[in-house]
Image (cartoon, rainbow, N blue to C red; front, side, top):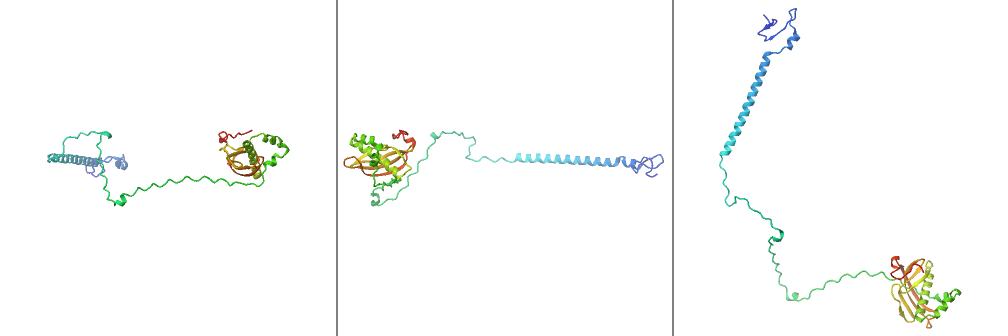
Length: 263
């Protein structure tokens, strides 16, 4: 009988037939193959055995290695090394021993002439920068105070000057001359008051006064000036005058130097 039978030991599997006696190919292909499954299971069992044997061999190898290392002789401790821990004490900086200072290097002997030479004087300190030079004095040739006093509006001033002492008269005439000369020099200045002692007391000179620290007010601002004023022998008129105007006086300095803002 061939493989078309219901069960054939040579074929090793079932081959179902349809009612007409032919083999159902689709059903035959879907049936398991007992021999192949058995062979696959045997292969898997063999692989498991190989892995188990490899694991056992590796474990035995490690145990043999540990046993060999344990039987090796231990190195003897080196002589001279302490076997116990060393106690360490931290000292504060104040208790640390100081290193001995290095000896000063020996200086070569110098000749007597050099040893006996006097020490060199220190270089003098640089001098402070010089102040800005004062503007040159202007020396007008025409005196203006007498012309001002000669006007009809100055009659009361002329009468008051006659009652003053010489020193006061000199100061008043020179102050009037200073304001007139400043206005003639620069028309933008309109002096209405002058203080001859704002930054220093005037000093007496032959026939008049010199005021290096004077100040005049113009358009509600104060300006520094200096002047030199000489009068005629009868102290009635100004004979010679020279002046120089500096910068404006800062407002914060007005009160300190007796410079009123008004009046």
